[in-house]
Image (tube, rainbow, N blue to C red; front, top):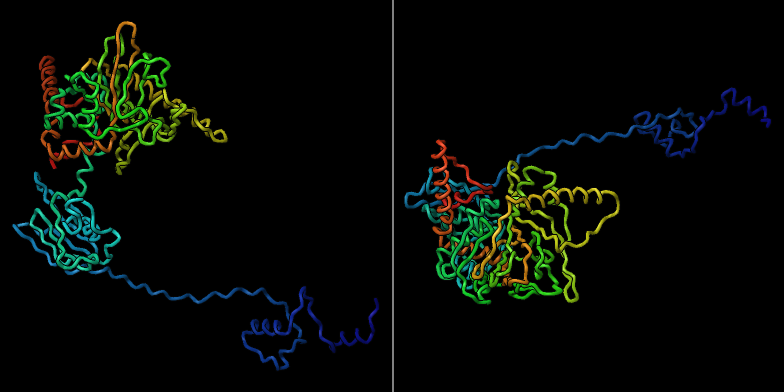
Length: 534
C-alpha cells in the first residue's frame, strides 16, 4: 500500500515524532507515572516536558519496593512475683516450703531415710483437693463445689506446717467461702493424694507371673470358715489373689448356695443371661461347650461382652466321674515370654483385634478385643506393663476384612503371632493341673488366668460345678479396704512363702556345698515391698 510522499519526507526530517512499538496502549496517566518513576521526580502534568507526544524509551521492568525494615524491640517479660504468704513452721519442722507465683513445693521427710519426697502443687490443684467438712459432705462424702468454680487467681494467705499437717488459708477463694475457710492436708496425702488407687490394689498392680511348676509350690488354700470369719486370713487370701490371680477354698459345706456366699464376700454378684449364679453340668444339645463332657481348651469367659467379668468362681459339688481335671495357665506369663523373645509378635497381638460372639435365638452378643492389652508406665527404659489378656477361641467370630492386600498380610502375620502365643499357653511346664473335689472352690482372675478342662466320662459318675462372677471394680474396692484395715496381713502375705523358699535354697545349697541363691522363681512385675517401706 503506497503512502503520501509528503508524510514520508516530513517524518524523515523529524517534523513528526516517531513512536516506539508497544503491545498494549498506554494512557496519559500511565505514561506520566512511568516517567516519574524513571526520573525519580514528580512532573507537572501541565508542563510541556510531560507531553504524551514526547518520545519514550522502553521501560525496564519495575522491581517491587522492599518495605522498610521495622525495628522490633524485645522487652523481656517479667515473671509474676510469688504471693505474699505467711509461712509458719511448728514443732521443729524444717523450713522446707518454697512458694512460687502459682504453685509451691514442699519437701516431705521420709520415715526410714534422710532423703525427702519433693512434691509440687499448683494452687488450683491444692484447693481442689480440700476435703474439709465445708467442701466434702461428712455423710455422703460428696463435694459441695466444682473444680470449675475455683478462681484462676487463687493464692494462699498463710501456710502452717508442723511436719505432719499443712494448714492453708486462702485469698480469692471460691465464691461462698470466706476467709474463715481452712484447708488441711496430711503428710501422707501430700505424698500421694490417691494412694489407695495405686500400687497393689490397682489394675496396674504388681503380679507374680508363674509357671505350672511354681504354682504347685505357691498355691494358696484357705478354709471356708477362715475365709468367711477371719479378716486377717481373708486379707492374706485376697493378697494372693491380687498377685497370683488364683486361690482355692476348702471344707465348704455341701450346699448349692455356698458359691453365692463366697462370691459376695468379695463383692456383689455379676448378673448375666446365665443368671447371677449358674451350674456347669453335662446336658444334651448344650448351647455352650462347657455344658458337655468334651475337652474344653484354654479360654476366658464372656469375651463377647463389652465388660467381661473380672473374677470367676467355680465351686465343686460333685466330681465322681473319670477325667474332668481343671487346667489353669497364667496368660500374663505367656504374654511376657512373647514380649521378651518375639517383640514383633507382641506388637501384632496388641494391635490386631479378634471378634467374639454369642449368637442364639434369644441372644446376640458381639465384641472385639486385642489379645494383649498394656499400660504405658512412662519409663522409656522399661517395657509397657501387661494389664489384660483376651483369649477365648470357642467363642471367636468371623473377621471383617478391608479392601486391598494390606489386611491379608496383617492377618497372616497375626496368625503366626497367635500360634506362638497358643504354644506358650499350652506348654506343659506352664500349665497347672488340679482335679477339684466336692467341697472345694477355685477363684481366679478372668482377664489374666485362662482355664480349661479335660474330657470326662459321665457313664460312671457325675460332675457338677456351681459358678459365679464378680466384677473387677468390686474386687479392687475390697483389696483397698483390706490394705487399709489389715496392712500387716496384706503386706505380709508372702513372707511365709519367701521364708520357706529361702530355707529350701539354703538346704539345697548345703547339700551341694554351694552358696544359696537369692533369685526368686517367676517374673515379678513392678514392686510390692516398696509400698510398705514408704
